[in-house]
Image (cartoon, rainbow, N blue to C red; front, side, top):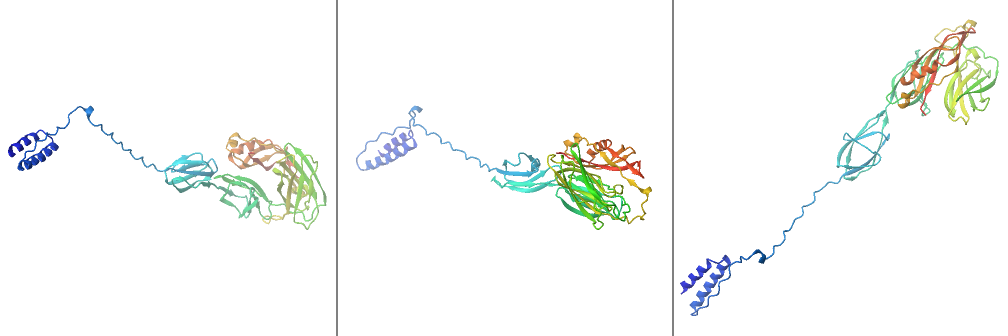
Length: 439
């Protein structure tokens, strides 16, 4: 009986699942145990097989959980404000040009960069910078102007050359005999060439960034001084208006033989027929120089102390900055000695010579190309003057190349009072300085 019950159970288990088989096996064991007890336990019904019903009766599936992908780790960019002078300079980071300097520049990957700043006429500046994420400390860079080169070769040896900055109104230095390719910062300058026994020469010039200036000033031996001054001449002055210019004429000597230097202070305006003058020449042979004080835009020394005027005359041509305001200037003079390089010869009537004096100076036209490139400076023109005071030829000897032709054209239209020798008009050579300045 036991065998039969087990056999039947086994046969049933073939149709059941693994779980059913386990249950039936336990049931069979229980049946055997019961049978041994003398009482037959009823066979429990077999568990139902796994359901094969339609999907509609199956338990609903849980929706699949969608895992979110982590956001990529984007590095924080860098920003910086760069201000440069001049403001229109070219600024590059690692060779790539950037714009809008002076405002905040953004969108740079943090790291090391090479900053380069360039501008025509200025020295390039390059430096490494480190950009950190976020805002960086602002930077300010100022470029240095390129220097120009000056060469000065006077016509005689043994000279002393003094250079003065007009912009800063201070002395730059003194040089002996010549200046050979010396670097100077850009700006307006004035040089004075002196030598004992020679008349000094003063020239104004402009040095451009990376430019070159070559000057060949000429100085002439001084005439033999008169042993005693002429009779005292009372000081008188006149002021004439010539367009934008005032021509101031000062005549007079003090006869003071003890004075070797002096200053004449002059104040005038466009409506005054005479100038207010303090000081005078001594009447001894001397040389004079102009010093602008107030409201002077341009000036030229038309005539100065000489044997022909008894060392008593000064004529200055001045253009005021503001025509409604008075102008003020000084004439500094110092007595001179004869040249030690040539024998002293007593003056005779045959040696009487008077230089030509400009009576009309044409104003040059500013070349359009020079104006566009903002080229300015002083052009010195050597002119040959005939016996009637006309300019026969004109040649620019120094000054910016773009301005020389215009200066030569203007020089040919100038008029002079001719030079005289022994009272007779004669040909002579003079120089005219033309100032080109962009307002």
